[in-house]
Image (cartoon, rainbow, N blue to C red; front, side, top):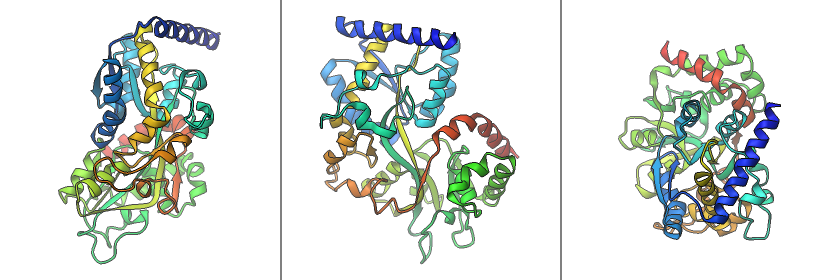
Amino acid sequence: MKTTMKLMATTCLTLSATLAVADGHMANEMTIVSWGGAYSASQQNAYHTPYSEATGVNIINDESSAEAVAKLRAMNEAGNVTWDVVDVVASDAIRLCDEGLAMEIDFDEQLAPGDDGSTASDDFGDLLVSDCFIPQIVYSTTVGYRTDLVGDTAPSDICAIFDTETYPGMRSLEKRPINNMEWALLCDGVAKDDIYDVMETEEGQAQAFAKLDTIKDSVIWWSAGADTPQLLADGEVVMGSTFNGRLFSLIEEQDQPVAMLWDAQMFDLDGWIIPTGLSPEREARALDYVRFATDTQRLADQAKYISYGPARASSAPLVGQHAELGIDMAPHMPTDPANATNTFLYNYEWWADYRDDLDAKFQVWLSQ
């Protein structure tokens, strides 16, 4: 019964939004939530500015994506949803969709077809991991290191994070279990294909925490994507995890003495959700925006500013040179064959199921 009511409500909202678009009744201001830094700058250049110029809509940027799930839960509970479009990782989109906090999308009806004639669902393909999630980019969480602080032998595999004898000094890791737990088990001898089966058990989780214990005193924990690049630039850490696009900016745009470690890079997807609970006018505007921002050309345009692979297959051939540096961007993508010899495929469904529990356990571990 609840499922039926939810579907009816979603259908009514979608119909209202469609009518609002047809009548031209769309909101003239939007709040778009993302991650900040080089990533938000790439969205501003590729999506926001062209959309505002074409429509006159005022876009307000919010950099709260790291807290998106908690904040959307609170907004929904209060009956006051102030965000219009939210950038989230795939696992968070699955959670928000399951909880009814993100609206379901009819991909072929509400998104643009590919420039090659493909339907949106064919163009995005397997990256459509949730009925509520509109993918933008394939990115990875990986490790950057100071080339002048690692001695004569540069690190070549992910387990250098745990090797404080060869590479003494502070590290920076994200203040959440995702990625850290997988890398800990991998570097404690668990086969890659067995990671999530092991981590599903209490013993496996204890094993991961025990491995992280070995470097706990040498870690600066970060919450914002800009933290590790700044720590690396300041020489406060010898190595640290962050998003590959952040490291690209640090290395290529800022010319810092930093290199990237692609080994066991953690592939992930990032994209848009539209919160439920918007007025028909705001929902219509949000749908209009995401149709524009996720078409073939716009996704290819984002790759001019940051080294994230576009989520549409039809966008890949359009990826060219960096807008300012003039360098070819394809070799800087996490999906480039030279960079993807040993990737870690992130398990979205697993983390959607276990995230809340492990988040709590991780915070307890940090406090001990």
